[in-house]
Image (cartoon, rainbow over all chains, first blue to last red):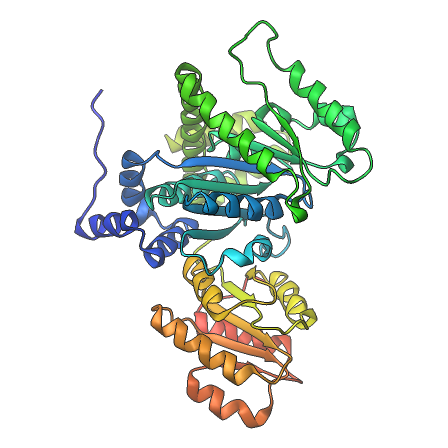
Length: 327
Length: 136
């Protein structure tokens, strides 16, 4: 199949070169433009994607206050001790009322600010709807092109959109605490299915052993017991502020990367499933943008809403009409 | 998010631990639709400049409750200029003495919000230096 090359002018090529050289200022500015939905950067991101895919991307999610940022801080220190360069993309929720946000993940990682081998960027989920996964994915392309060995992608895991984001990662680390509820909560949480490695943080709190047992059971159940090649997600107990269990956690994350290396067919399946979700997100986002820009005139759209409220039409029919107009 | 969102980096330098004011400001700004990247206390000038480079905010705000702010601000602005981010507007808040304002302005500080300043003044400053509107 013929695949069109990104339409990159001299200026775009200059950006690509700067990003690949690791020019921090240009990389940061590019991410700002991605967040601002500046479509003129799309050819640059396209070019970066085609040349990328070398960084080990680790997605980290879990409930608010589970200790994700503190664990990330400790992991950064471990990777740096091995002379690996690190990028962090920390996604925080926005206020549903004002759209504003306080992005505070950096506070826990402040000691790495003066380290040129660490690039930390905060991103708000502000009003992005499905576009968040797109913005995060494009930002990851930039971090990857910077040549970072490891990219830590941190999100607060409370909803489907956060799961969509961590799906950009080849290794997903789920952080839970003993306060995460009983076995039923563990099973219905829905994020367990995407976890490759689990950290039971605050393991010094009461109930840690029971929480590990519940997690263990929930995670084991999802596996085919007859498949000897299947990855068995490790569950590591950690106490992030004191660094307890962080070496074991690093070992588990390394182990998962090693598993991908020895199971290329499984890695291929994961990459295909990632590609599918990235592509689906992009199509959905594109439709959403066109719709926002008014595929329908405002008056016609208002008329459709009237028809819905008065039951002259129904949401399925109205949506079908709009989608037909968009394609 | 849209292109019009104001991104504001807030933090403190040195040994100053009186963070109540800047935390309160962070919440007030969030509730006006600003994206606040909060760095907390105990930052070094070099660390803050690196954060500034990576976060690419529209504006930087520092809070001081100790008497060393002239020294710290000068050091930070020098490092910002050396790193090519001297153009990011800088505002100071906290216990900034009136007598020091001319010297700080001469250094390049764009906004000074000492005792008696109001949130509205800070919001007006943000609008003025960024040229972006506030949604709320």
